[in-house]
Image 1 (cartoon, helix red, strand yellow):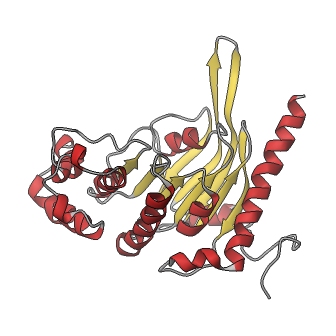
Image 2 (image 1 turned 120 degrees about the vertical axis):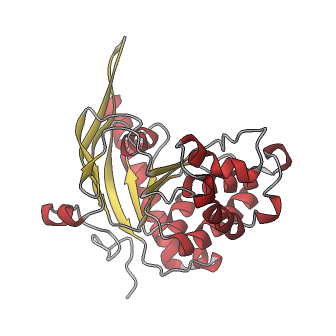
Length: 283
């Protein structure tokens, strides 16, 4: 029997992690908070984030605008430090930026005077590694993402979707232990975004990396992810942890499945539930 929204504990809704599970987890985010001191008082961006991610999982963070998703990702990536709690990857605390992480942001931020290939290899150059050792992987990624024929083009000669493909290749070229993607498709039109979702799903079947992905699109999160973590309004917490019960490889037709739409409706309900309760508290 398929789970329904009337079921208080559907099979795809996961409980909170337990201590023994944390010892085996690849990424651990334990009671993490972030507070900014401002002229008008403290601003609590993230109140208490608590979850674990297994190696190789693709996990999306969704929630209302301004709920602290990007702040949480910055802390996971070591770009900001938490004011409370602990973050660790494979048992090692994250206490600053790491060379073995990959990052993809909303803007592709490509160097306009460099070719596609040179942009992909740019992190290798900045880390003073041997370019020849990483060129085969750059070539493989460009072929997987359909960019091989454009390897000598400059960013101005590419579409927005193609520039984001380059950014994803760049994030993967150093074989990262963790890939962090902050709304990489948010600036794209709907048709291009659908194409990028399919491309990324197919790419993931080849690279098998651990990833944290931020999006405002519920359907995008459910389609791409092994798990979806739902955050409520700032100061945010994780209010739902969903294991997406669809096997890979993912196909576009999956989005027409009743269970897919049921999960999307549940995520939407949890986002609005938290958002409405926070607004009521502020009155």
